[in-house]
Length: 198
Image 1 (cartoon, rainbow, N blue to C red):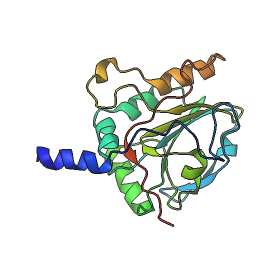
Image 2 (image 1 turned 45 degrees about the vertical axis):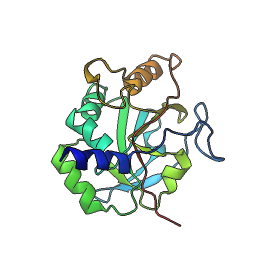
Image 3 (image 1 turned 120 degrees about the vertical axis):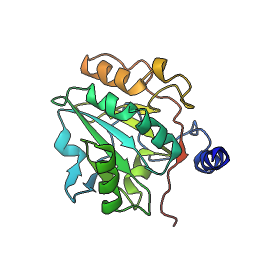
């Protein structure tokens, strides 16, 4: 079983995010790419409708061992739960080409998630943001400017979960306080996003 888990991690793991951004990808300090995506229940969510609030985007894939580890440790749920819902919106985005509303709905129910899981099976929004990993995180301020892009924390292997530095919570707190984000970009880690092949 341990061998299978190790193989799974190797298969899903990807090289660290490239330092250079591809042309047209979202950049910290600039307007975040607009989007409209439907969630697991068919409800449409547009970035523009959340203007005035801080928006956290979490790229996810329930089949990714790195995502599974964070959900077992409740990293995402605890981080989201520590944020003021009147000021912050959390949206999970799944750009896996083979996933569906029904699979997202089942995963959301299994995890007891309170936030929507947006489906991006064509990968349009994922490519616009330059999302390469799951999990990969983005924080957008109330004016629609991207303020953070990178990992959820500084603990890729889950060996220091109790003392891990939560980059997203730090970024959101800074944005809400009107202060610069201490680490506005970090190296994302995890599985590669399983985009639709062209």
